[in-house]
Amino acid sequence: DGGITQSPKYLFRKEGQNVTLSCEQNLNHDAMYWYRQDPGQGLRLIYYSQIVNDFQKGDIAEGYSVSREKKESFPLTVTSAQKNPTAFYLCASSPQGATNTEAFFGQGTRLTVV
Amino acid sequence: AQSVTQLDSQVPVFEEAPVELRCNYSSSVSVYLFWYVQYPNQGLQLLLKYLSGSTLVKGINGFEAEFNKSQTSFHLRKPSVHISDTAEYFCALSSSNTGKLIFGQGTTLQVKP
Image (cartoon, rainbow over all chains, first blue to last red; front, top):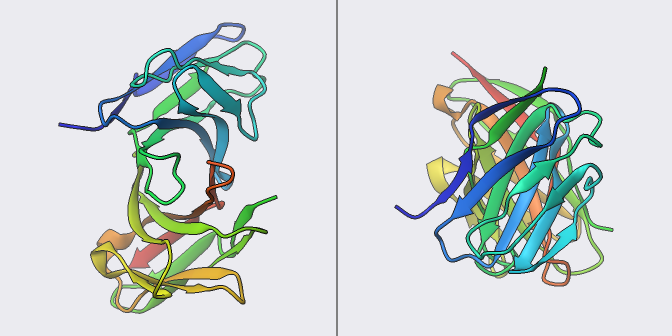
């Protein structure tokens, strides 16, 4: 089945560690996005990529990094510089940069700092 | 800068009553508007979208929304809600000049029996 897959579903991180969240899509979409979701704050854009080997910072990029070496993959690394990383992270993709088409979402990864 | 504001953080309503979830947006260029629904611990799925044409847009599960350019609004409505409609609802916009998809803060719809 075509879709977008995030892994793992739950992730625990010790303070000071970097962790990488996986996002893979087999929809042949050009654009991919990472959002952070906190209660009462909606979805805030971390990074987005409209094409392979290119990506742009969103509204809250500090403490995060991404790569887009393959069309189907857009991993997000939460670095030790991110002071409050506990949140629900959502990855999305769309065929044409989400201009006039819907975005498809993964099931999310819940990251907890222990 | 573009933004989306959802005016109500929580909307409690009884089963079979009508509901309206409010969304206002700000943009200096033309936008495309979307409503998404999120069930607990899951991703988002599209309810409906406005791209152009008729200002009344019908979506899945009996939801509809009306685009009002003069009031910069895109309110979501359903004439009769079910318990299963309990979820969080997000309004979003995108535009061709930025390539970004921007979300509002979300509205939690609580349907009571």
